[in-house]
Length: 384
Image 1 (cartoon, rainbow, N blue to C red):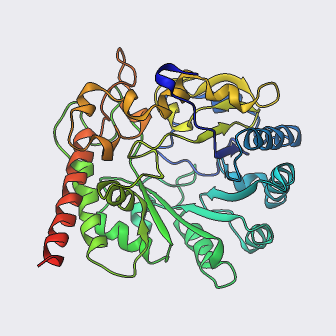
Image 2 (image 1 turned 180 degrees about the vertical axis):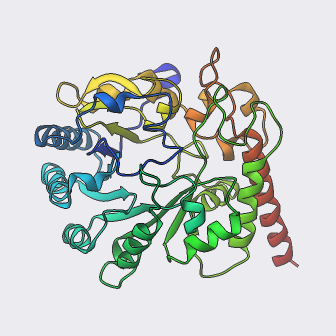
């Protein structure tokens, strides 16, 4: 039992870093280009023994907490470097360990470069969903997402998405992830992504902290470049019909209308995600790698420790405390329960740790305020 009777929330999302290397060299990658360089000491690929241990621990955790469904996220690096056969065997092993009482929904998050028909047929056999990372048009995508030798990755990804859009594989398509680059035109970016007919687009803010701000953000500045960029996209999206869901906007709308968030980017829903690295170490959300070397570590591993041990780690507890983990600045804000302090790693400042507003505080306030105004206007019009 914790203070005030608070109880930890069991994990429901298990992110397996099945391969620790990547075939792209994205400028903003938090795994390879920022503070934490632990990937250098990781095995390239997760061994069958670690997969088996992870399967056992996931099943054990679900059974202990009476969980009937979990989400398995195959990640990296680039997970397709492990090969479709390896990924297929990993999913099958985890489902077999969890059966018959726990349903395992599986998704692979890939840069798309190696996504071919053979891989898609393999994923189709086990109903593995596929999410692809793409930053918009060819011009916009290739500002950051290139091969190590500088070559464009866009044509390879576009070809993979053309396969994924086929009727035979369309049901596997989970959506597109796009990291916001202020140098890219927001309308051009949204329209380019929408042309690939994703069921969902998730716009991600580039990772940064107060002492290492993201591109275009100056610490403590009240300018809102990211908020303005996202508002431009929101107005395009909100004023159209039949387009893809945009996760960030939909989450904010849900929260403004009194609902809950399914994302750690906004809202106060307790985190339910845990990361398992290729060597079996158990980590917190891997975006903490932006903070400092070892910031995501728990000191635990999947062979020797049950996942319940990770639930007691102070960093995971803090990501589940919600309102109690917010700074005084956040709790006095009108949008506190909508913003939720923003993504946890983005709150970090040396000296005060994570008990700060997000480095994107002003951007999020501007975006949420704008979306609220649009909703209020629509409600007024509909009530006349």
